[in-house]
Length: 523
Image (tube, rainbow, N blue to C red; front, side, top):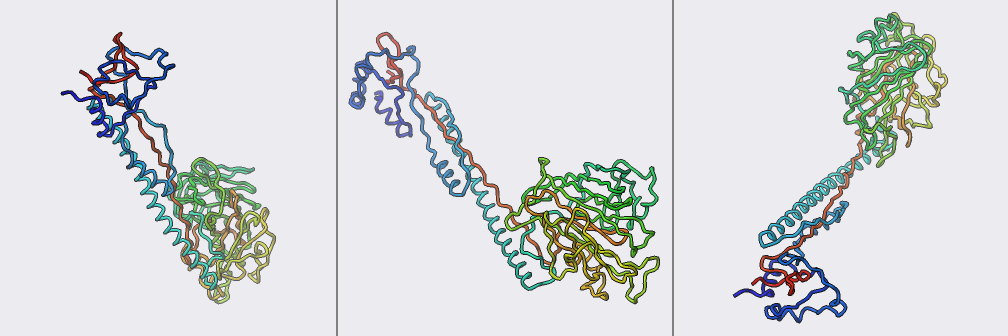
């Protein structure tokens, strides 16, 4: 016995398939429909009189034209979306995807699986995004708590006036250290200003600027040639005539950040404000020390003042200058270091041979409208009235004017070379990037919005080594604020589809044409 259409629809309903009529007008004109499914008649309203007067839309006899909506459960996807919202993710609903129409039980099952698989895949993706973000957020929250704890410890050291403590309990917003980028690429070396400044062959310039007075055309080269020199490590040499500048473009930088932005390029500019030709030994790694000045026949304690201006600019991956901005109580803290004040006299009061007997006194100056200097507790370096000027036979030093373009100078007010001269420690202990480097240094922080930082170095002697980077002394660990995880965006969509069963056919009228998509049992 054949099943009635009603029975068939009940079976489809049990399979989670819903009956939804697609047309507004249905005609039930055959006696067969009334005989086969009389119980359906009462549940269907006849078309109104004005609707009956309209010509019905028909298709060719035998075509399938009646379709039902295919609904597939998406409860797991809905739950994943809800949990993602609660976790703080950004949710974006995309356009509903039409998966088409299925005819027959096999095709219907296949289409159901396609939609179920799609929902399962989306659910899995969103759940993973949510889980990953929760884990990253938990890690960040712990790091933030540790960061605040370290700042509290630094504040206690400041309150106790402990040696080496910074002036303020702020985080380090600059990751720019010595020996951080040994594989950097020097992209460009550009000289500017009147003069014959040039790069030099490897080994031409030596520590103390030996070789500067014997440069010839054959000493000059067109690209950097590297060799190992003192604190610079792997370095290259060049010279600048009076008033000349050179800009070194360092690229391929790794792990260097300003605030939360990765810096992939640095432009370091050196300008010679002195009245004579000057040599420079510059590091391949931009965070290392550099050496500048003139050759003084090997003398250290001589009265031949020299100066050079050093400027940094940092660039992001798009080639844009990165401004200095305070972020989460962290600022870009530069350490201006290796500032010596050394006596020409030996411990027994004598003067070293082949020296002129002048103290060697070094300083660093800057524009305090663009940056702020701060001391480390009990450091030998403090704000002074101007650049030091060496006195005859080390009888005492005096102070001159600040260099052009600056209005504040920092230097040692008393000898910091040896304990026997009253220093807290010997220079051999502090004049390196180790735990006590703070003793011959100060902190310099650019003001918010500044796009460069500049220091003018000065020495009363013929030449000096200088250190200018973000590697703060390790007496107290200056924390770097953690970077919060990026909030992900989870996208999702819903699906729609229709179906037709095997055991239905179109209702036809007396002319043999389909009547607007109505279905009845096949005989």
